[in-house]
Length: 103
Length: 149
Image (cartoon, rainbow over all chains, first blue to last red; front, side):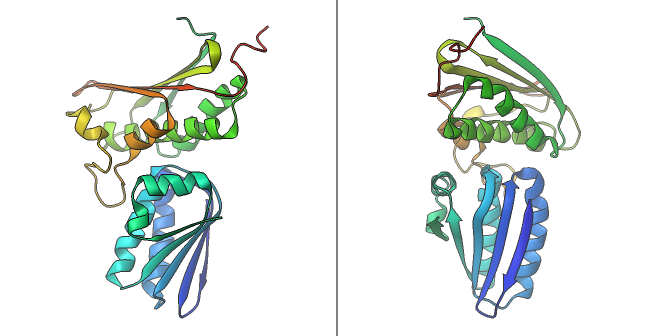
């Protein structure tokens, strides 16, 4: 699991790669939250292009970041989702809270 | 019905073992020659069940997780994930989508994901004794016994 962050005044992009499960979600959370808290961008984008596996921990991860971003008045976009991950996020009703885009 | 082939695996409830557990079960299931979707379904469901053991069954300690998997005729695959942890007081409530006792970072979707990715799921639990989750999936790939020797 790796994370890469690209920040501009308008958009913070968090590139995730590898497997997202309960074990590595903890480290992801720390890095993502630090970036979100230090950024002034009102658009936060999570790029899932290189995510090879995700279980419901990935949904919890997005939900948690949504709550944080909301407290700063920022919105969240989750992009480059595989069909499978898109369905899982919809199963959780995430499309009501964040923008979901497939590959 | 007797399994054509089976395996057993015992791991400690450390989160670092989540990836190992789902990979091991998927590697065993590979002999059914599953398609990628079916294999991802099983990997995800096992990951959910094992995470439940780590997060819920043994919240403050490291316990044992017992995994058994069996291959049956006609592409049927079964996985049983057992713990000797705290048990679930109300299984129906635990299985409700979005129900979680942990809040915050947990989505409360573990059982919903297992249900949506498997054909059958059975949960039995006893307080202070532990929980057994049995997952069943019929792989639509080549039949389980095609290349049996």
